[in-house]
Length: 152
Image 1 (cartoon, rainbow, N blue to C red):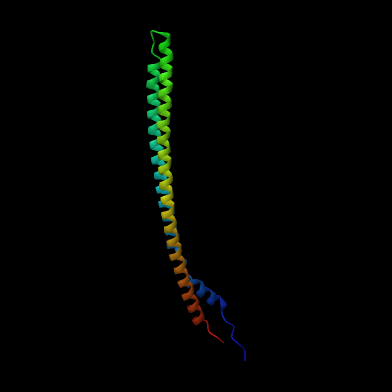
Image 2: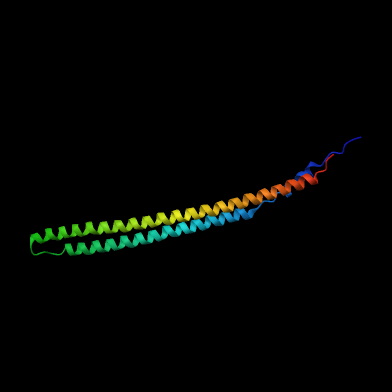
């Protein structure tokens, strides 16, 4: 008695059809990444704007003080005093502005860490859900394939 050859092509086709590709997980990952990028860009742009404001104000203040220092004086000693006053004011302004830049940097660092921690939590949750779904789908497909294959 000749045994009938099993059609493996149909069995493999059925098995592959039972393992659907879940593009939702990829869509979710893309959306999570895009949202994180948007938020990080917002943090960077806000910091750049504040830094520009500080730099612009610093420049205007310096130019105003230079204009005052460059005015003609009646006594030679007044020039030395004007230069000393300018240097002293510049040292004070530099300290204030560097402190303001440091505050901006500190805020950027805190906001970035907060965003990265939140994104890590979201990514972990998305990955766990995708793995759980894939495991369930694979188990169901394997059971279906095992029951569909005739045993001879």
